Length: 193
Image (cartoon, rainbow, N blue to C red; front, side, top):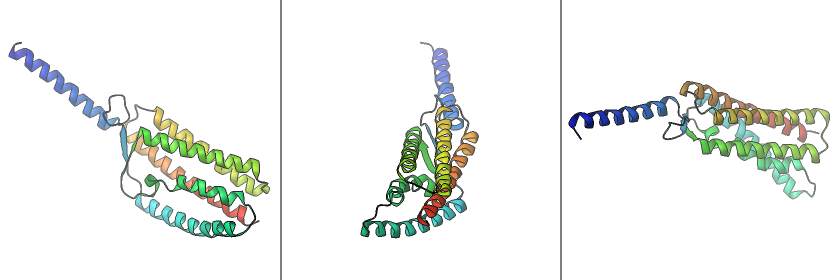
């Protein structure tokens, strides 16, 4: 092999590696991407407010749960809420720092959202809520369906640019926070019969 041929091969390999690196940077979930992950940076002020609201809710909820354990009455709403809280306590929702989210992470988030939706659907079937309470519960379920759609859009949009992903993850983050508020309203209304 001549020197000229070696230089051509090295140039082609270098060009290919450069192409892969550019695609990985600009299109993190593309077929050409080496590490299919995106580093999401949330708004720290929004996260701080969310963490405060979540902690207040958990403090109140823990009292309700303790009361449920000491009483002989069964309150499915309070009982099932303990299975829903992990959805709202995910690291990427609570972190003020950038968080890397891979396709596997998106799959896990989607799985948790689907499980939460199933739990709420079971509450619809098993509990006899008043009209207003049921409306808030249905709104929360619809919000979870919307979350599922947003996650699936990110997972299937493999050729999305970094700029588009920033918008999609920002919208997903805010949607999770809004879903928590809807669930919190439902929970409070169901407790104040």
